[in-house]
Amino acid sequence: MDGKFVAYYRVSTAKQGASGLGLDAQRQAVRDYLNGGAWELIGEFEEVESGKRSDRPELARAMERCRLTGAKLLIAKLDRLSRNVHFLSGLMEQGVDFVACDMPTANRLTVHIMAAVAQQEREAISARTKAAMGSIKAKLDAGEEYVSRRSGRTLTRLGSPRGLTVSRPDLGTQALREKADAFAARVLPTIREVQSEGSPSLAVLADRLNAMQVQTARGKAWTPMAVKRVLDRAG
Image 1 (tube, helix red, strand yellow):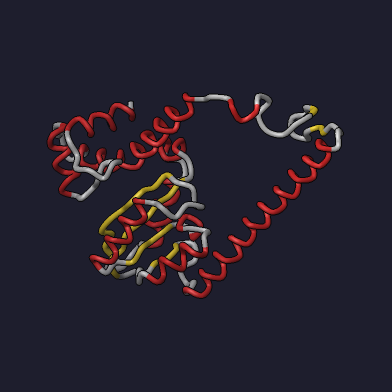
Image 2 (cartoon, helix red, strand yellow):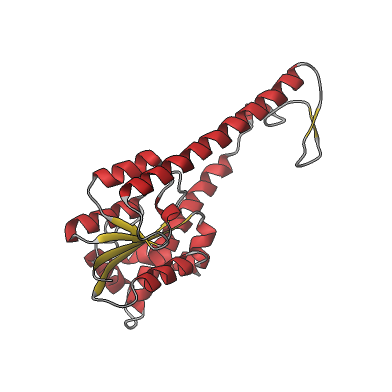
């Protein structure tokens, strides 16, 4: 395999990202694909995000690196890129060439068709779920009881037993914590790579991250304290 490549890895949960579950397999797939030839892997980007979402900053950075360098975007599996046909179409329109290790001979038409089929299946699942909920609601509105097949509980209404007025301020804090953990999981491999070159101080680590154009979770420049927060989350 010849040419320049930028690798993009994605997992769906913060737990997978922190543990490396899924990431190691994707890295191995990339290494196997690039085995032999005059290739150059000029960048690697990791994301912890659902494939249903298209606002993925690490993927955006990987694509920007491809545009700046003329490299190809390399992914381990096609579904790691996206199952959203509109997003995938936009990616192709931006002129970024990409290749999936599990389907290297697929052309753009093939990829477009596969993404469209996957999205149609998601929409069908959503429609079936809404229809099932509508059927349950109709029974409850008619005064009938419904026994959940999953929990075995008898339901007399849908939604929270206390209605929609239940206050859960802890959910906001939990969401922020999970988002910070997910970002730390993404950036930690880069920090570890720099640390493996010696025993740099926090200030040196911050300078190296800034030189590599790696941004913080807020899109800002790194400071020694920002690096420390990531390392503290890693334990």
